[in-house]
Each structure stands twice: as structure tokens, then as C-alpha cells.
Amino acid sequence: LMLPIWPNNNPVAEWVARFMAWQTRHHAEYPTVTRPALRNLAWHEEQLIGHAFTFERPIRSTGKEISVLALSGVCVAEPYRGQGLGVALVQQAFQRVDSGEFEVSLFQTGVPHFYENLGARVVTNRFFNSRSPADPIAYPWQEATTMIYPASYPWPISPIDINGPSF
Image (cartoon, rainbow, N blue to C red; front, side):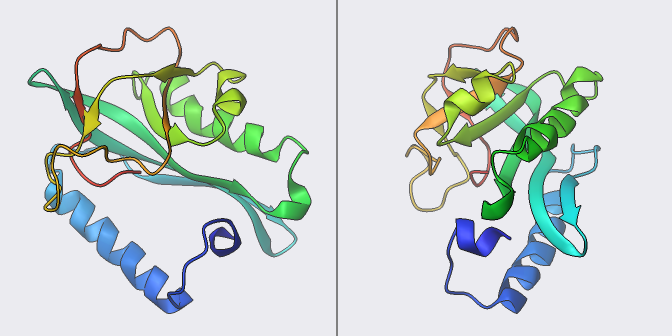
């Protein structure tokens, strides 16, 4: 499902191995993480057609740690787009915020209007990743737009350390 959306020359077996290594590394690098990572999936017959991944990420702002719901890998297979499946997957992911499990979700996107329609808003903080071995003060995201959900959350205006790889 993800390979056509985010092309990569690595074999599928390598993707699976990287995922398993990420799971182990994530829990070792963030000992304060207590909530499970969840994948919201949509299937048609036996074919995976939609995906949204959420996990806990401790980030930092002015020395204070904030545990956010990281939203990542939202995608829908081409033939199934425009039918509300992406909306349903993201709403299901955001239910972790709506239920009180998390106060806020943080994510990057190339389609901000999609998320604004679901109650999110753009944030314009300076973001960096203090754990980056290459450049800890560089902009860490692949996409230009960073957003939070819900829009009403009192998000800080200070720089934000995403405290690890982008998601």
C-alpha cells in the first residue's frame, strides 16, 4: 500500500525488518512511553486499502516535555480515494485525542486543507530534532506543513524539539 505512495527502492522484506527494528528502538529510546502504537487499517476483501499509524512521542518545548499523539503514514490506495476512507481513518486515529488518551496530536502533511476540515490547524513553530546526528537544529520534517489536532489546543509558540526522527 505505501510503496506506490512513497516509492522506495528497498525490498519489502527490508521494510518489514526496519519496522520491527523501529518498534524495538522506539521503546528503548523513549522509556516514558506507556501507550501502545496503533495502526488503523482498512481492507477490501483481502487487500489493504487504507492506513493511519499513531504512536506516543515525547517532544520538548522550553524544557517541558509534552507527550503527543504522532500521526503518520496516512494513505489510501488510489482506486479507493475520494470515498471518505481517509476521513474515517483519520477520525478513528484522532479518537485517541477525543477520548482523552492524548491531549493533542502532532503531524506533518502536504494536504493541510484535508486536516483543517477535520478540526486540525497549522502551527508555525521552529521545529528541530536534538537527536539528529547530522544536524540537530535543522528543520526535521519532509513536508512543509506541520499541524495539530484539535485546533483549539493551547499550543506553545516556542521552538519545538521533536526529540527523534520525523514522523
